[in-house]
Image (cartoon, rainbow, N blue to C red; front, side):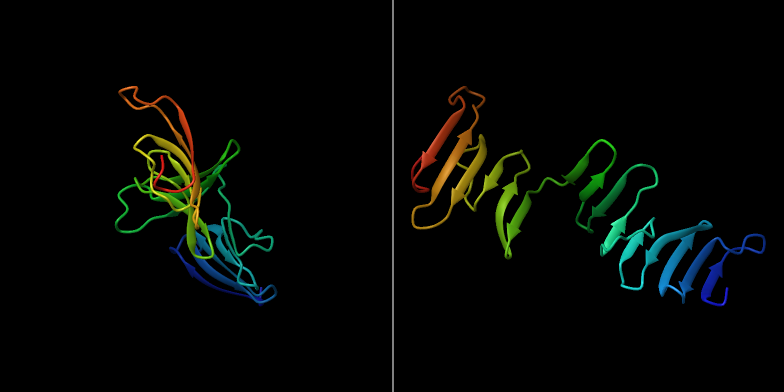
Length: 170
């Protein structure tokens, strides 16, 4: 096909084991490995598909042919799997495998976190005590917050709900 230009890699018996292919009709590029086409596909708008050519208007699409699609982010200080976003027929997952908080925010500001022990903090305040399960707060002149605390190992606290006007009250 004159509309397709390709650079192929392989052996004398199978010269298409690897392939970089450009299609002039669709202005798309694909990368092949192990004689399987479109392992990575880039369409004419720069949208990228991993394992799929059906990018459906998304900047990045990932297709897992085994029933699970996963995206992993990690670096040279990550001792575990790092941060994984996954999806299969049973669930969608956002998992941090490191013993670090997960932060969520808006406008460049962290507004919510899930701490390594499972505590959820909404707002930017420190834990009420070591057994805090949920903090909801709003910083300002009167830093209002709701604190839900579980019992400790000495049964000094049962489940406690505290509504405070500022951070100096418990």
